[in-house]
Amino acid sequence: MTKIDWYIIKKFFSTFLFAISLIIIIVIIFDISEKIDDFLLAEVTLNEIVFDYYLNFIPYFINLFIPLFIFISVIFFTSKMASNTEIIAILNSGMSFKRLLIPFIFSSIFITVISFMFGNFIVPESNKTRIDFENKYLKKRKIVRIKNIHLQIKPDQYIYIESYNRSRDIGYKFTFEKFENGKLKSKLSANYIKFDTLSKKWILNDYKIRNFYSYNEEILSGVKLDTLINLSPSDFAKTNKLVETMGMFELNKYIKEEEIKGKEQIIYHKIEKYRRIAFPFSSLILTIIAVAIGSQKIRGGVGINLGIGLALSFSYILFMQISTTFATNGNLSPALAVWIPNIIFFIIGLYQLKIAPK
Image 1 (cartoon, rainbow, N blue to C red):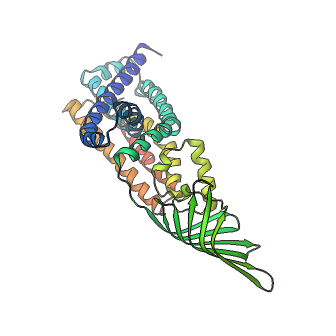
Image 2 (spheres, rainbow, N blue to C red):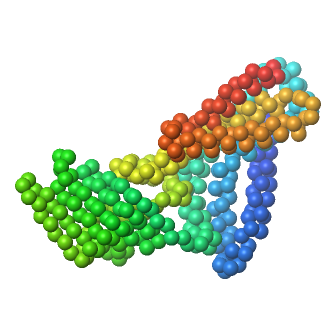
Image 3 (spheres, rainbow, N blue to C red):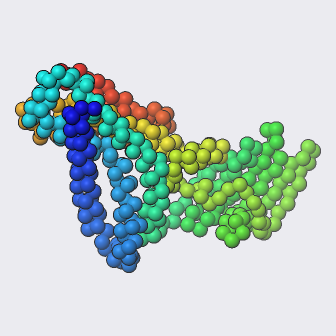
């Protein structure tokens, strides 16, 4: 590492930390002004606001926009270096542009690793406290009904519920079927089921059991029945908030378990799984583009380059939203969807490197 390398690394991190700190302060000020009435109405203590909400909001916000903060920061300070003819002086000293990229790449790889750790381990934990705070103080409780639920809880066991009320943990028009060697062996149906939080059992009301034998069948019925089913109320969580609280290993385990049950909502978890891998790499790709753009001394200087940087930043977000929408609708593989923006911007990066100063 030369003095120039350390100079660039110092500039990289100081500009990045300044930019992200400034934006966080501005965002928190606006967020407080927006939520101050809710805080006062809910009589939230200052300790809860600071330590339960904002202290956990900051990691979430940083991880959400870290590649874009890097992109803008690198464009800003490389453009200033170019306008001060520092880039030209470095290249005239005999250092190639590819060699000039090394401290930038080294710094962005470090940020990529930090972003990966944040997204998979730190942020999910902080989200648990933040989301609990939001649900408790900032969001009005809504009655959520989920309709036409089909679940496979074991290889030969299937459940159907016409409608499920999450706020009361009640499922209506319940059916539970068991198969053996592809043949229906028993069918349990009930007018409605309710989860008992004390016994951790499902209570069936107005139930009927049909057992199928080789030449006949047995029918049993009753008013109420306690039963153990490999199912919990959290299995009906139709919300993307749940995935935000799962660490990498927990998320992988959850996906494997839910694939057996055939849950449609699993697509959101798969997208999140692959996004947490692809998203950190965008820091490296966007850094290369930022250096290539910022190192070009053009009329208009820093302002023009920043404008280009902002346009590309919003384009990246747009591509991410479009590809995720396609994956959600089943038109695109989740793994491919989250990598499309990186692939597109990697191609842009190669082009920018081609026209960069030599």
